Image 1 (cartoon, rainbow, N blue to C red):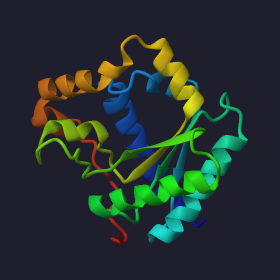
Image 2: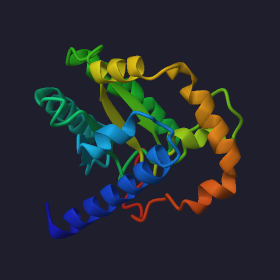
Image 3: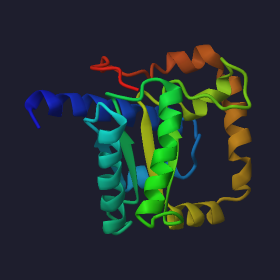
Length: 195
């Protein structure tokens, strides 16, 4: 990795950490995020991939790396993808590849993959709805979560099934202008728009 590559990766990680701290934790969109963030158990991985095929290899490496370590060392991984899958439909198609990879590695039921994207849209919400922002991140990203950790967190949180509704209420109260004032967009310019 060259100095420029390291500098680019640092910008991507800084942008992602700022999003995590200000939106995910700051707005309490995920009540489970603060603990792993505070304990330093989140691994930030920046993929250099420019194609979905290259990204699949990076995802495989990060999945294997996550399950090889004790959860106290690495509880979760954010695989950030600044150089491909900029279009949400292409990203959404890649999620099928990611799910198949979980099955191929016998990790289905061990790890789950949550999806975040700058253009994220829920199928059941109208375009432009603020609810989409619950899953909007500065860059395309795959969040690798241990199923055991998710189960423990949900069991410890009363009425975890209401988190989504609470998040929508929080974002509606914040409004589009409030979301934009958080300035959570990427500082890194697109190098190449693949997929």
